[in-house]
Amino acid sequence: MNHATSGWLMGLFLALGLAAPAKDIQFGGYTWTVRSGHGGPGPNAWEENNVWLDGATNLHLRIRQRAGQWSCAEITMRRRLGFGRYQFQVTGPIDRLDDNVVLGLFNYPTREVGGDGTHEIDIEFARWGQAKNPMGNFTVWPVEPGGKHVTKSFPFSLAADQTTHRFAWSRNQILFQSLNGHRNDEGEEFSRWLYQPREPAHSISQAAMPVHINLWLFKGLRSEE
Image (cartoon, rainbow, N blue to C red; front, top):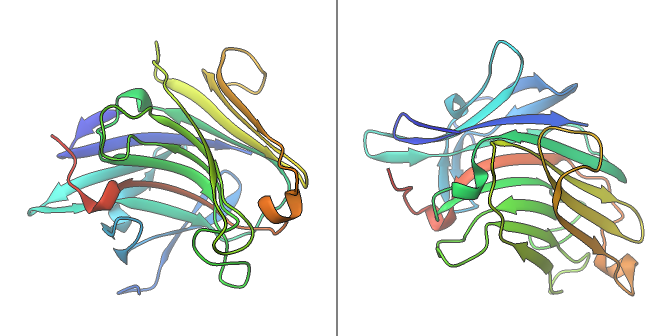
């Protein structure tokens, strides 16, 4: 990650109301919609120009400041995916993000599947505005509204900027992993969590959902330059 244009620049590699028509990109073999406008999480402003592909078709997301206004980045897969292994390869010092910056790698329910606070499976890197908090967060949200989400948070420190993050989602369990380097094997794992609830039908979503990738500001609070 480089600190550029008064904001955070994040390179991401995926293995696996709007004022204008939404822009689409082709990335990782899928079509994604690039977000623009205003709204949660945050709430934040979202700009299409904060998302781009480089010459090697690697995805870049950034948070930037322009004319005193901070804006964030998000893409949403048009296709819905179900059980399987979801893998994200990231380039950037995610152990040193600003305390108000959140990097999210997750699936999220469409309206007919469920509302906010349900179904979601999250890998997030954030301190949630508090420097004392650990940076890594694996989270599973319940199927039904009003249920309690379950989170495993973990500290980590990176020797290099390349990391791989996964969740393997099945009907009865979800296995989360974070590993050093860009890899498809099990080497250099620095965090793991196997979530096996007693009542998986109530605790783990059984519905196909689109994948989201976003980079945003907690409570819309500014990033430190």
